[in-house]
Length: 190
Image (cartoon, rainbow, N blue to C red):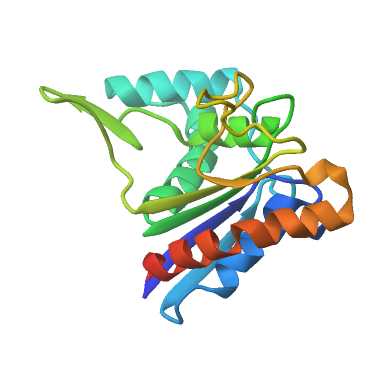
């Protein structure tokens, strides 16, 4: 059975275009895919404290952690273990201020560690998580290429759900415009 981790980065739940597009993808998944949902705004993500930073550096250097560092580091390890043990990923990410929501950035910072999610060797950097990823970005405006040139405000790409701020009908139309691509990507996830 394929394990898919669905990471939702919107606090708006079902009202978010990114969540609606993710639902299209999820409904199109083959039966052999088991989905675990991680709603970043409903999850008590650990803070990056001095103990966490110290633990990260000590872990990377093979040094012993204090009891307090080990306790806080374990909460980080739990997130990392969930991430690296997954076969496939679905990210539903709205655009915030031309970037990603702060909880998405926090999650990335929490799971990105040398020796846990990436390593460096004589061949350079390599990721330690495997599996395919589908990223759905929703944006209130249209940031697609213009006149053959990338939009200077497009800091996202993959499955685009655009022009969602033009009202409920536009949001439904944006999700529907991405339906075929979402269903095709979902079919390949199994």
